[in-house]
Image (cartoon, rainbow, N blue to C red):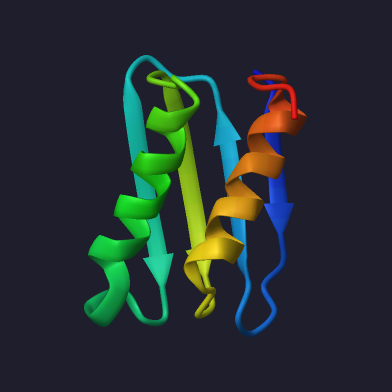
Length: 86
């Protein structure tokens, strides 16, 4: 199984790992999950929907990343997996 990732464990960043999966599965670990867990999931789902991706496993380990960082890391991981061309 091919796995791709992008990001770091540094403060204000996130590490996103993706691989092929039947359906969409999102796993979120975040130091700010209580406050922003729903927003993190919303950003991930919106980004995937925009690119027409419905079958993917996404794991995010968030250290307080802003929305645009999450989106950038997700797009990079997906591109590395070969799902989209940027």
